[in-house]
Length: 177
Ligand code: HEM
Image (cartoon, rainbow, N blue to C red; front, top):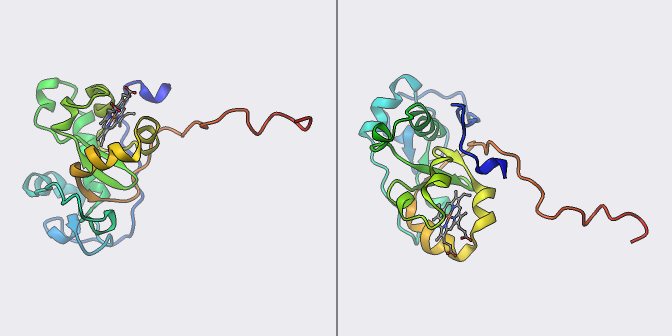
């Protein structure tokens, strides 16, 4: 399972920009918005904005589509911050966010409680890990343990691994079958 290996390079998760729209980074609506995904913060001020923003856990009863929108550049910033600091000490204060099906989960605390270990969580910080998640968990675990960790929804964050086929061989048995 190559995707389980910790990453060795500092590639940033791919981000598909939703529009060319530019809104001042300090405009809260552009960073964390209930109103859609048509704004993109100026990257130069991301660190500043990020420090000032609050990304609280959302009510578990809220539907995914009603979650506040987190601009993908913010999610990528979390990725960059994490993967450009290799020391445990400097990572201690960093956010540990995962993206599963375009929903952002804050696993900063949960990573230490994760029954599957801390390493798999840390290897996906700021990145999409949807198919990897669904390989090991069912809807019930998502509802009970994942849902309370939701902080928002996002878009365009790519999984850095191509999903391998789940069932190999079933369609290649040949015409005799
Ligand atoms: C929101 C993020 C996540 C949550 C809430 C979560 C939750 C859980 C829970 C509740 C279990 C225990 C399952 C059981 O005992 O039946 C578990 C196990 C596990 N998780 Fe996660 N997990 C998350 C992310 C991930 C990710 C990204 C991976 C990487 C692929 C992963 C890999 C595993 C593995 C390998 C196990 C052990 C499975 C086993 O023992 O059969 N998890 N996780």
